[in-house]
Length: 391
Image (cartoon, rainbow, N blue to C red; front, side, top):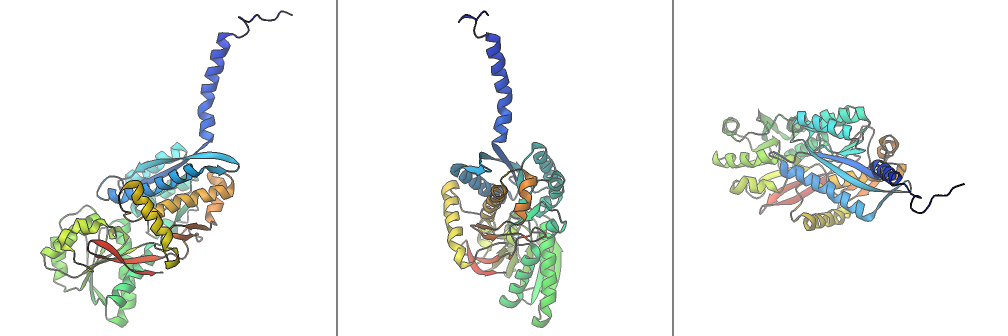
C-alpha cells in the first residue's frame, strides 16, 4: 500500500469542500439555538409613544433572559425579538402577522390595540403560534375561542364596569355624555360603560344624556362638544386614546366645559397632561388602567419602573410592565414544556402559574387573565395619582 507523502496528504479541494459544507450547515445549527419571538405594536403614528413603551418592556425581558442564560430542555438558547410596527391599522396588523408567521416565530407578544389584535389572532391561530396581548382589552379577542390567544390584563367588560361604578358611586355623576373613537377598543369600552351605567344608574339617578363619536385621528371636536354642552352634563366619558383625549380637553376648556373627564387605559398615560397643556385641572381627569397590583405586590412594580427609567431614561407610559411579564410568562411555559416549539409549550401556557411584576398570572378557559385587577387614577400636578385598585 502506498501512503501519501506529507505534501499530498491533504487535498486542497477537500479542505475547500469541507469549509463550504461547514458554512452551509452553520445557519441550521445556529437556528436551533435561537428562540424567535415576535412583538407588534403601533410604533408609528399618533400613539407611537405607547407602542414604543410596549416594545421597550419586551426588550427588557429579552435582555434580562439572555443575560441570565435561557436553558430549555437541557439546551441553551438565545432569544431574539422580531419587533414589528402595525401603526394601529388592522390591515397593516394582519400583514405583519402573516410576516411573523412566515418567519417562523415561536410566539408573539401583542398586538397593542384591540383593532389589530383581533384580526391578527386568526393568522396566529391558523399557524399554531401562541399569542399574548399585554394591552388589547376588547372581549371579542378571546371570545373567538382560539386556543392560541391569551391576554394578561383585564378586558373591557371589567374595565367598563369598574369605571361605571366609580362614576356613579364615587364621583356621583348624574348626567353623563359619552364619546367614542369608533375603534374596536374605543367603541367596545364605551358600550360596556354605557351598559353598566344604565344597569346601576336607576337607583342612583345617573343617566346617559348624550352619545357622540369621532375618530382616532380627529383634532376638531367643537361640533360634538357644543352638542354635548347643550345637554348640561356633569361628566364626559371618552372611549379612545390619549392622542385624542389631550386636544379634546383643550377644546373643552375653550368651550367652558370644566367638568369631569373619564376614560380607560388608552388615555391613562403620563402623556395626557402634556397633550392637554393648561386645559386640565387637578382631579378633573379620571381613568383606569386594565391592570394593577395589590399593596403586597407594589415593590415588584416599583422596582420595574426604576429599572425601566434607568434603561431608557424615561418613565413607563402604561403597559411596558405587562409586555415584560407577557414575554416572561411565555418563556416560563417553554421551560415547563422543555421545548420552545409552539405545539409543545402551548398546553403549558394554558395552565401556567407565573408570578410577575404585575401580579400573579394565570389564564381561564378563554385565555383571559384570572382575577383581573384594575387601577383607577387621576392626575395632579401633571402626574398620575392612584385613587384605587379594584376588581
